[in-house]
Structure formats: structure tokens, C-alpha cells
Length: 185
View (cartoon, rainbow, N blue to C red):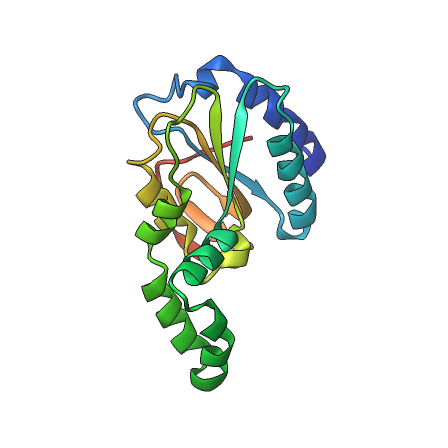
């Protein structure tokens, strides 16, 4: 089995391929991919993604969306961010979870992540999946992104496992079944 650094080294080559950038060869499926890694490697993966997004010499453009940062933006915009800690202290974490899921719906995430126009060579990269759990589940994001980003590849960096059907966050939590994504490397 390849180690993480070997797998990360393959990413630029795969993204650089014209067929990948144009979503070709997918049998009419959307170009959604999951790059799985061990949760202990989170900091290595974050560093890699930051470098990948900053490097403009590859012929593609990485648009990174950190799901946790998106959650914070939603809460800030809806003027509830300052009350989150107090709400958890007073009503408990289960109440906080319910309230944040009402405030930050999948549609809210999608609105914050959407941009136009999608340019040839764009690749949307989703990070922060572990940081935003359990407030937003990755399968909900993928389900709702399909109609917004059918023309560019989307790669979710996922601290867990994906067997082509089931997302397993941190190797401990079954997120849900999701059939439309491909394992990236």
C-alpha cells in the first residue's frame, strides 16, 4: 500500500490531465472524487492543499472551500456566531447541534461555496470535513453540490474511508451511503 506522501505526489499529475479537467470518461456521472487519508495525517494534508491552491504553474486552478470556515461564515452572516458558546453552555451540545443544523442548512453551504463563472481548469477542493462534523455531514454536501458543479471536478479530502458506497469518517462514524463519487487516488 502506498504511503500518504506517494499518494499526494500523484494528485498534481492526475488533476493536470485534460480528461480529468473536462470530466471525461465518467460514463455520464458527475466528476466527484474522494481522497481518503488517515485522520492522523490531517496537518500534512492541510499543508499540501494550501500549497496546491497557491501554486498557479500547473495549468489548473484550485478553489478550496473549507467546510468549517463556511459554517463560521454562515453563522457570522446570520449573526449567531457570538452566541454559539453561550448556547452550548446553557442548553447543551445536542441542542446546539439541532440549532446549528437549522441555521446552516445544506442550501446555505452551497450558496457560500458557489461561484461563477466556472473556468476551464477549475477544480473545487473541499476540506474541513472532520472539523465541521457533526454539524454538517459530507454526504449532504455532495448530494447538494451535484447540480451546482456538474462541469468541473470536485475533490473532497476525507479523513476516513470510502469504499465506493459508504463514507466512514475517522474510521469510526458511518456518514452515509453515497454512490456518485469515485475514489481519487
